[in-house]
Length: 283
Image (tube, rainbow, N blue to C red; front, side, top):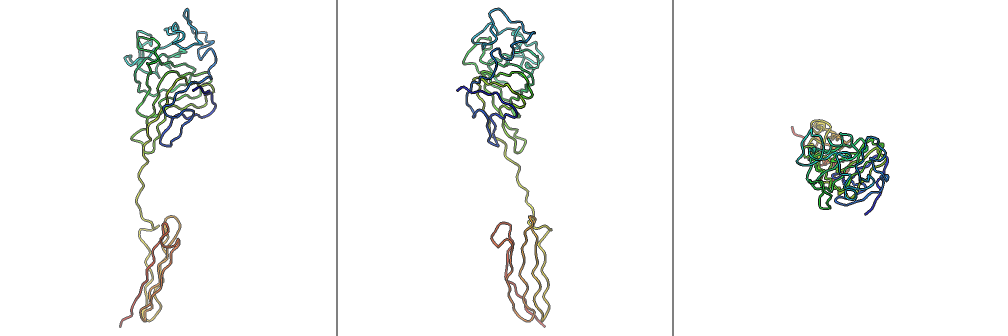
């Protein structure tokens, strides 16, 4: 599948919990065509192009470009603070991007550090850890939480190729979403043969149990007097602004019955209940 992915503005890719995806469904492959022929590294005066290297081509098409002159190298066996050369690779893709070279070469394996891109760069997977091109080599970027990959405010070209990127929600944050990649305020972002997927989001916080009445308890009705009409039924205001009205008491001269009323009606959501009441005079 070929799809251009140059966008302006906010671009969420492969998200869960809110179940929103942009550009790619979970696990789908894509090949973009938005990067210029020379790629992010074209026209840069600091790039020393090795003999036989064609920067307009992928590492598989032009293996001479897999060189310390052109890129920074990342391996699961690498270490933080390394030089990023073939013989001394870094452990983190994010640290490699920060080295400022136009290309980052990532060999087969898993990487758990979130990556934020703010400068033009091309990140290439599809390499063994002997730095040979291989279709079977698919590095996986899978941090335990947060945006796995973010591209933000990049004015030049960004290219991501031959990687699997997996987003995961924070299990300790209620309602958190899982997002594999998110691009914003960047006008030239290309994904080639990249699998984007996201796990399930984190469930929201439980609701709070509380009284349905605005006060601590329902309002008491009026007292009946001997030989007089029954006490007035109470009006109880609910927290959502609705109310229920209790029935009046019976006449003090004998048994009397009146029915209460409720708004909303009895049986509707958040309604009060009505009940026939009676009083009997004595003495």
